[in-house]
Image 1 (cartoon, one colour):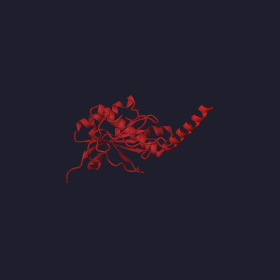
Image 2: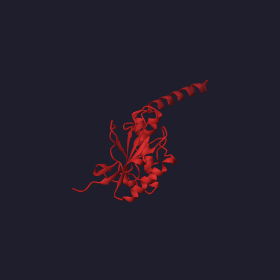
Image 3: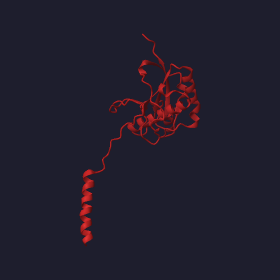
Image 4: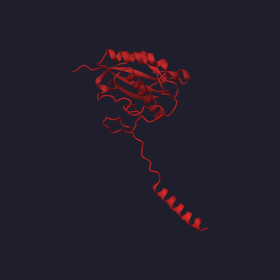
Length: 198
């Protein structure tokens, strides 16, 4: 009986202590790659967001795998969408893993970048219409980052590459079936050439 009288107050005190302190939840933020100057992260909006940092997730790259893009602005370049239009890569449902069948397209992109050392590259990650906008934005980002990492292994300097995720906002096929969805789960590559000086 004496032991029970001692245990109950101790248990009660412990419960009160845990309830008052709780588990302090630290907000999850962007993990900055070593050597990068952190920038203020804007609140997500309805439009596309430029992505330079890997996100946390199942298919995420470990921080520091490849450096972030150099300090250059996409708006200072002319877009050449036709040059690499045939080299679009596609993904399986809910995946950012690049399949072996997509390697020839990546090789062609790497060769185009090697042929023009002044060119930069924009990788646009896209998803099909299923899933929430937030989830698809994140998945599109992981797809673009996966392509960027694969290209770096093929000799493309990651400092010349930017990524952007459009999520499900830019389908190439407006259909609502697997055939359309398969076309929309993709990375598009846009070659960027410097604008002529005024």
